[in-house]
Image (cartoon, rainbow over all chains, first blue to last red; front, side, top):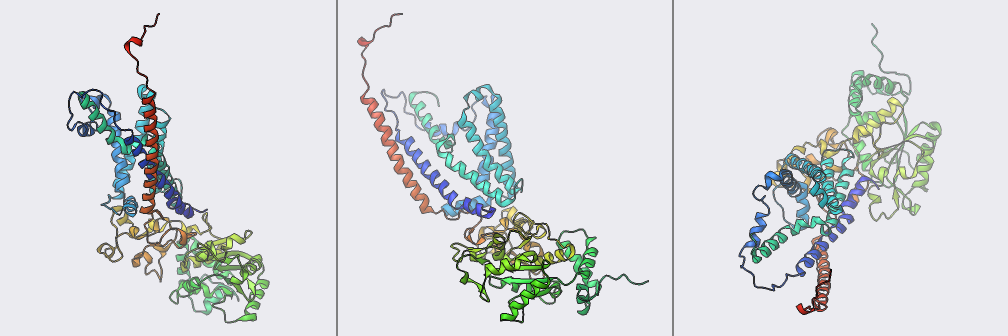
Length: 219
Length: 371
């Protein structure tokens, strides 16, 4: 199998299966989460909690008073990584073409150099976050296999994409195939690992906010 | 002072042929300089090349055409005359070529056998077209199957040049479902140096470059992993494309005739395969350097890559899935939903069972454990 055949496989059957697992897995997880239903209140809530869930979706995205100073690495590197990854996924012209072919929707692309810079920022942020995770005793204690797996499968598409664009290590066709394979690995694992927070983050924030609000805890 | 003799005019040499055609030493040196540039050799090699070629005997070449469309021959012979390409073609001894030779039938086959006998171990074998491994009747010449003719002729060849994507990688005849069982030259011949010059058709000057290199050094040029001369196939079309800056700026043509297309913006979205295609079109160009497909407004179809015909739709961007569809994903979502309902039902029944099994404990039943 030559490199172009590998690329055709990566864009063909491999991608089809990865997308099928990703979509089916994501829908399954949502059914599972929502199907658990909420606990019935055994006592009347102290307050009604209008908008508490929605408010928490926003407030949990912003560091609470004093936390930015206490945990600058977690917050800043976290923001940089997520923003860099978001720009790379949704604003690189070839990626938009991918979304267009599946959804029919398209939007403006950013110049390659800007996307490139955001990828570098995301990779650096990931490296910093890993170092911090390993050096911070609390974070290290809280981390398990799932966390390191999530870190690795998130890094791979960024790294291979960067290397393909800059023609590093392997020739472009092979590196592009590896990039697509790494994305497929991410797609397959996403619904079943901590990476599912991509979809569930705001759902869980809303739930927490609403739950705590109804119990009378400040949200 | 006697001028330095550059062209050896002894009978049968290239120098003699050039002289007969009235080619001046200056013109010949210009050709050699251009060739050294093309082959990425140091400029000083131009003189060495000129001397070597002019002293060389006219190289015997046998050209075999198998499952092909004659596009490769058209490409090489139809370059506007008189070009350096046709010039060098005049200077080899093309002893056998279906399309170009005057002889036919038994006389033609005799010419091939004679050339093989006279130049045993020295002739250059050029092949265009793929070889059918299915029924031999799919393609045969003078009652000889393509496979037999290739194996027989390759035996005494100094080197083989596979011209065009069919000979190099199987090409369009090999495209799915490959009804004739087409294979490339390199799939059959394993004991001879093979230079792959792919393209559908290949660029004439690449062909000339390979011949020049062989005449000068008596060896084949440096090849890449797919057997292609690195000097011509070292970089992708995309990396050498004059529209590349538009790609980097995120400026793309959406259709073949929109304003962006007229402005010469990048054709990536229209399915251009330039990023994964290694060839020299963007630098050497076609028709005496006039243009190349992308310059004419059409994306690269990747014709110099193995199995390009089966590498996804020609008009789908390289980053688009080859075959994934919305309905496929819809079915996946439906399957996910069905599985989700099953999981939810299971979870709820577990919960209900736990609730049913829950035994209430009254305060009276509680006893303090004695310590």
